[in-house]
Amino acid sequence: MLLSCLLCSTCPANLQNHRSQAQPFTLTWTEGKCQRCRIAQQLADIDFSDAKETWGTGFLFPYHGQGSGDYIMVHSNDGGRAWKELRFSATHGGGPTFSLLDARRVWVSAMAPTGECAVRRTQDGGLHWKALTDACIELVRFFSAKRGYGLRLCQEAEQTCFARTSDGGHTWEYSALPSIRYVDKAVFLDAQTGWIAGKMQDKRVVVLRTIDGGQNWDVSMIEAGNGVAEVRDVFFLNPRRGWLITWAFNEGGTRLLQTIDGGKNWIADPDNSFQGQNKWLSVVRFLDEKIGFAFNAVDTSNEPPEPIKGPDGYLRFHFTAGDENNLLYTNDGGDHWDSFAIPRRVQDCQVSNGDLLCSAISGKSGLWLVKVHPSGR
Image (cartoon, rainbow, N blue to C red; front, side):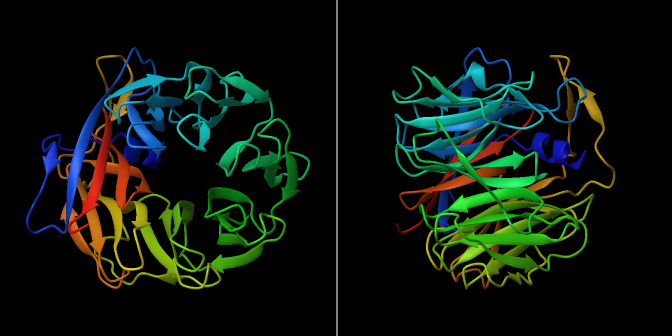
């Protein structure tokens, strides 16, 4: 219920391009249209190979009253104005994963609703795709045409394994990850340095760090409070500075934590104005040691939303008009945050050439992107 509400909330849809002298940044909104699409009504995860080539995960949620929803890869070659679905990537209950090496070379991994898995690759920007393996791999990142990392559930060990390929995704080697039961997020700065975050069997939050490409892992336990449901986001600016967002069950809201020693120790942000009960942080990104952004939504309703039937027959959840969406900004490395109201809820962001490029949701449908540009840059 909570996840469906967060994904399908409705936000005010005015303000195409918002600029204010009081804001140390400008926002440029782009509303995309999905051409003859069956599933993609909103955007979730996104990535950019250049200013025009954009890839993402589209979703329809929920589907005929089922809370798990349908997902599919989408692609735009005009900066997010027009999108097309990759029909082979349609999934149910969880989205496909993907990795971009450049504008032409992209890998997509998806499990079909019938249960078959496939990792596919394009070398011509999505015009043609080749199936490489039927292994169920959650892609993390490719670093070259041959070397890539992923995750896989090792059935024999009933735990998540780290996956490596050295031949472009045709074959994979697996090694069990220590001290982690449920993996939520993984991020790599390069082929050697990366982090994997999730929970242990007792739901304690754990972060794994490698500095040798996954051969060895350091384990850090995080005191993130009771009732943590998942690690919503992890971002590292460099090998030392990182941030992490946790989500709690029910109305417990979220917490923002940071590390200055590569993930060995984590400190909770003390500012409760934007986190805690009924306040849902989604993304945190830093452009440098000082300038950072985060996004949250505040549930101001007193009752859980009721599902309504849309004109297409799908059940949807509609938040009250009092729901608030905010952009949080810091210019001192996160010591202080300022909050600015925005008209839509941001889902995912990537840093690109000194800007943030993000996906956002608004209303029942619409594939929205927003570029955040710091003033003076």
